[in-house]
Structures are given as C-alpha cells and as structure tokens.
Length: 224
Image 1 (cartoon, rainbow, N blue to C red):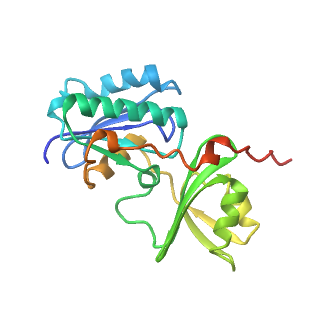
Image 2: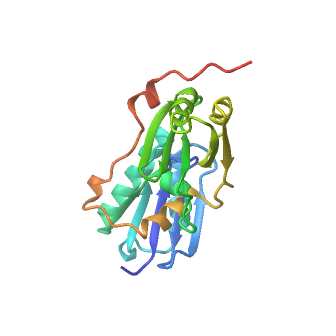
C-alpha cells in the first residue's frame, strides 16, 4: 500500500499521534501536555492530521498495551472509530514492540518492561527458545527472571526497568538499560505497524491490559 499512515498511542505515557510518509519519515507528531487523553487527544489528532483527509490514509496504527489503562482504552477507541469511518486498515502494535528498536534488532536475549500503576509492571523476556510475558509486582518479575538466570549475569533491557533493577541486583543480575527511544510513542507504533499485516477488521484489534492482577494486585510498600 502507498500513502501516509497515522499512528496513535495512549498506553506509554501521554496520548500521542504521528503522521508519516510511506517511507516512515515523520510529517507531524505531537502529544498531549497532560493525562487527559479524552479531550486533549482530540486536539492532538487535529493538529497532527492538519489538512490530511482520513480517506487518503494507507492505514492507521494504534498501541495495544500494556500500559496506562485509561489512555490505552481511549487511543484504541479513537483508532477503531477513525479506521471504520475512513474505511482504511487498522494495525495494532504491542507496547513491547513499540519500545524495542526495529533497526538494529534487539539482542537475542533481552527484556522489555512496561509500567502501569506504582509498584506494578509487565515484562516480556525473550531469548532463543524461550519467551516469558508476565505482569505483577517488581519482586514477582525479578523472581521469574532469576529463574532464567540462576547464576546471575547481564540482562539487556528496554523500557522502564528502574523499579525492577534493585530486586534483580539482589539476585546477581545486572541490568544494562538501553537508552530510551526518542520521539513520541505513536511514531514508533506507526513505523512498526507499517511492517506488519493489517487486522482482518478494526474490531479484531484488542487491548492488552496485562494479566488480571496487573490492575488488581496491591503494589509493594515503599522501602525505607
């Protein structure tokens, strides 16, 4: 497909949107100045789209989480409505994929962390022949990762690993955090989506809120 793409994300911080050329070059991108994605998100969309017509888009991309519960729901609702109204394909992109680089590819063994509310996070751990996706307290994640590094070692990480890093250090695992990706999350979402197949329908793009206890479990008390 040719034509411009629109990307939206509300899971990884403030609501953001990006309009890109067919080669992925950014035309315009912006983010709301606060957490009110419902009202400010509409203004961000208007600013980013400018005079571009929805019907002329090649596709729309949206971050599907995990991440901010409210922001994710709003961004997904916007994306589905716009894709349906414009009759263009919709592609959902995991927050884990949005946080890891396309080029160069991540190391064979790495972990990507996504934060929700205080004390709770999700991780996707990958290495050849092994993949783990888990949400829970920092201690939960550290314990699960330690099972895969029984003798300690170095773990390359993407995303916000700060809360889990001390718990991993206690288990002899050193976290080598990669530099945060610049630009707005929506820009990474749409560039990733342009290399992915579109969903069969907008309704089939679902939110990933993490496991049930991601939203329900009590976070760990702060350490003194």
